[in-house]
Amino acid sequence: MMKETSLHIGGLAAALLTLMASQVVGQAPKAASQAPQLEGKRTQHPYTSKKYSPGAAFEYTVYLSKYYTPGTPAALIVQFDSFNVQQTAAMEKLAGEGLAPPFVVIVAPAGTLEPTIAGGTRRGLRVENYDHIGPEFPNFLVEELIPEAVKVENLSISTNADMHMTSGGSSGGTCAFNACWYRNDYFRRAYLASPSFHALAGADEFIVYAQRCEPRPIRVYMTFDEFESIVFSGSNYEAGLAAIRFLTVAGYDFRWQYFPGKGHTWGNNDYDTQLNALGFIWKTWDSQPVAVLDYSKELSAVVDKGSPWQAVAENTPLPQRVTASVDGGTYEARGGEIWLVPRSGNRRKVADGFSDISALTVSSDLWRLYIGDRRQRYVLSMTIAADGSLKDLRRVNVLLLATDSSVIGAKDMALDTHDHLYIATDAGVQVATPGTYVQVILPLPNDLPADKVAFDGQTLYVTSGTRTFKRLLKVSGRAAGSSISRPSGALDLRFITHPFVTGTNRQP
Image (cartoon, rainbow, N blue to C red):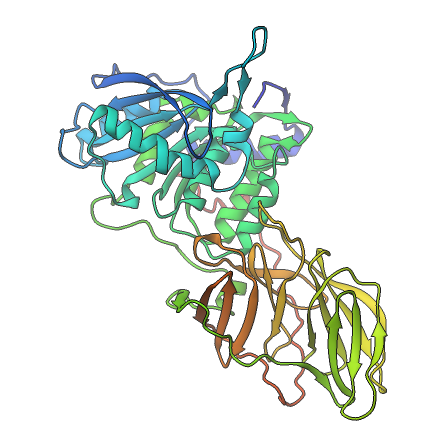
């Protein structure tokens, strides 16, 4: 990210942060500590992407720890922007003491595009590579750049995801977490210095989305500072607070450190800070895998950690679907219209003006009709009158979007016995209480989009293209002919002390 104006936190907030930060780091602000001389081997190589970032040129660096033994699988640290001498030296010290494994560093700078005509200007790809949220750059790392480095340097790198770490500052910090999230099969540890989780290119939306999802096994150490950048999209100071909220509430194995009197990404270049960070990131590396600490209360009410998605044979039909039926008949969608098909007599149109209705379902107390529309970011509802007519159109839920959503609205819906909607979207299955909020998101394996949903008792079935998945939940789906039941619409709004006051997850 470009150098921008500094944000100075003054008054009571600054005093409180300074007080708490002195407890975090154990001393007043100081000059950055310097690393001892590195003794490993460092080389640099060119690479032009062929698949995930076609045409982009990269100058990547490989560093072999002095403890690296050719032929013996080593840990991997992927650093962004440039080679981090302080971090690498701290890792050497820990590896020498057995507190971290022997390792290899691969530096993955942002790519460039060379001009195709004389006088053209080279284009940098830092925003595309580091700020954009999604699997594209993580896939480039795992499927292209790392295999290229392994081939060129004849490296031996562990295949265990717990032995792979990412590290970066500012937009590089965003990139480091993004890689762990979207390629969690490959990266499980991350260091973030002043990560740019604000509205540069969707990272602010991403952490709001990810907080509602099941946490993934990622161990994170984050640092941020008093004098952080502030730009049109927000500030990295505010982003640091948002990240504390997200990672703590969502149940990640996480520590943070704040530096009063310091500026953007200061911790990235301080040797002592890197010793603290890497000591946490690599703790119990040889005895315990990285794990999720806990589920939020909202998530735990829906699903158990011990019941993952299971693949079902392709083209397996879904369980019998529940029609949107009341005493007066059944509601059916025709494009942008809703028709009532009575048990006897002629069908009649009861509502219109919608864009592309995807699903209709009746509330558990039988007087509300919930409406999904592919082209609207809302779940809608209408009141069912005694004669079956519909009135009082309302928006009842705002849906969250996947980074690459091609359909912004609901593609299908199912209902449990407590009137919670299970909404198939490009972002996975979103669970909402009508009239309030989406509180839980269940992403499908590999973050596939969800197309259709249906319950069979406590088992939720979801399709994505020709693939079908199922999962045992803690709730039961509402079946055809179910008796009337009272919606559970209460929100658990907890007022808790800010983590700066409690010191939650601080590095002692």
